[in-house]
Length: 357
Image 1 (cartoon, rainbow, N blue to C red):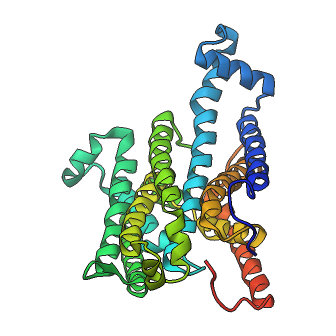
Image 2 (cartoon, helix red, strand yellow):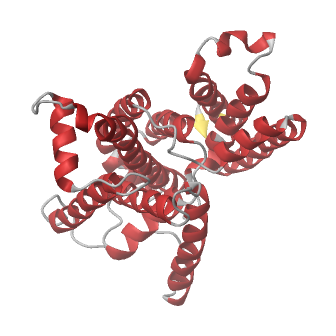
Image 3 (cartoon, rainbow, N blue to C red):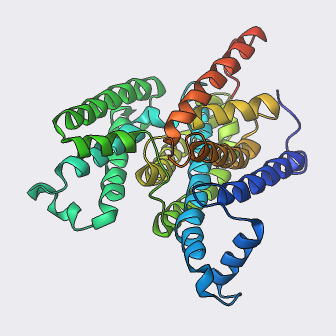
């Protein structure tokens, strides 16, 4: 379903998504092992910014809210936004409705990097990584994600042109290779190491900190601006690369640059929180069904909807078996898979024979 394009025509959708996200952010900040009222959250935030005098009575609550809860809320929203935008980009670049961010090896590459640190972190070969301390897992996971995706990209590039079909096949092969490596490391790991690998592969926001929030925010902000600048190129690519070129767009260069931007965004987020599936697959479909296939809307819309869905998922993860938590990856898979199947069934019944962007 395609509606009229243009910022004004989508203002209502942006307002609805923005208001819903704001409510979800407040709710996510309030619930958990520690619950906070709006008045408490406002006071702690004011104290953190230096606008309100601090008191000893507020020390515990302020510490939990500012150092644990708030970074988690922001990182979950940023991660959802990254995955939503990434899914939109991947489906647009490959003109394929079942493509998602992990297809190019980003997620499995990050998982392999994290597993290497968990299992071999104390080994001589990883002595440099061990000196990074708490940053070792994110840094090596980012390197693994970037290396795997660049390998897929290199295998699918011929004479400076990316072959979409070859890229899909290369992605499947590299994903299988990285998964095999992670599986082997899990097999030889000791019990605590194996649990760390499993927990990381299911996605978690429990380790969120301000440093990670800052990194992901900067990377995502720069990536989003770049993607918005290429929105019209993505619209032209819906017609095919040859047609886009005839309209004056350098499709090949745009595809290469967007793949790199997409890789950096997803690698940064995945390195901080682990593997989270289905968000990038479902978000673009939902937006196309209810609003528009115009990428000038889909890109910012997918950022808002992705952030909203991830905040809701994180709230559920904290409440289902409270005071314990479920890994967010389990919830996204349980919810995302049926939703995606319903979307496919609806499209099939509507007689949608091909992907329209």
